[in-house]
Image (cartoon, rainbow, N blue to C red; front, side, top):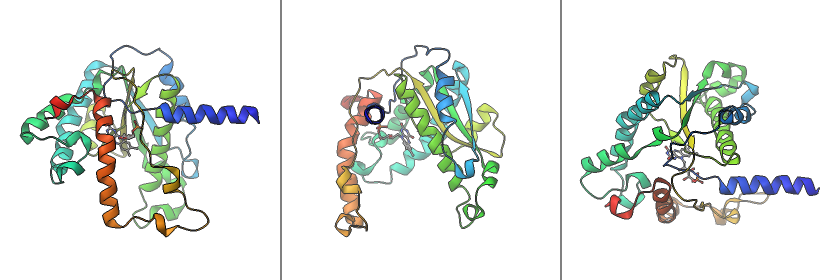
Length: 260
Ligand SMILES: Cc1cc2nc3c(=O)[nH]c(=O)nc-3n(C[C@H](O)[C@H](O)[C@H](O)COP(=O)(O)O)c2cc1C
């Protein structure tokens, strides 16, 4: 019993202290660290245990830079202009920029420095392995869901394993896969799901923000008093941004002056 509580306490501490970091020191990480991290990821859950994941470990500075440049050129540009459609305070924290948009875009592209992390794990998925899962998962637009659910599980285990080893990581979403696939020579049929830079943080530790348990848990049936109207959701997003914009800046070491 005591042991079980201890395991739970360790897990809770781990998930609460894990944090996304967006500025890394270049210091190398121990040789066997990546294998330890991926050994954990290998045990992720997946539909019908079809294990769609594969990983590319990138430590060559030239290839890391090519990946980052592909990211800035395609993903950052694409996301930046989409975010400009939204009201300033509702934009993603990275894209709340007040000055000339072209200048801000240049700043944003240059700011992404995850290629300086000593290692970058690229998570790939082979959708054909999902042929092992139930046929119902291949209908009505569900064809990608079991693939990406499995990849998300493996990816989160990577983030947890990283934190358990005293390191930090970032979840770099890939919205436009192709340029990164070209850099790495990934076959067309595979999905390039995620980029995870790992290393030592170049920013101080900060506390995370999560919704309180009582707001998200229902007993026996859905409690309509907790249901948010569309308007409530927008209000929630404003309050969320208020709480998370400073954290996001701290994780990238962006000063208030730089954002102006
Ligand atoms: C689906 C998903 C997409 C995310 N996309 C990005 C991203 O593109 N860039 C980034 O720096 N962080 C990204 N994150 C990290 C979140 O911003 C972060 O997990 C969240 O703000 C909570 O902060 P924490 O990880 O420090 O607890 C993503 C996380 C998830 C699960």
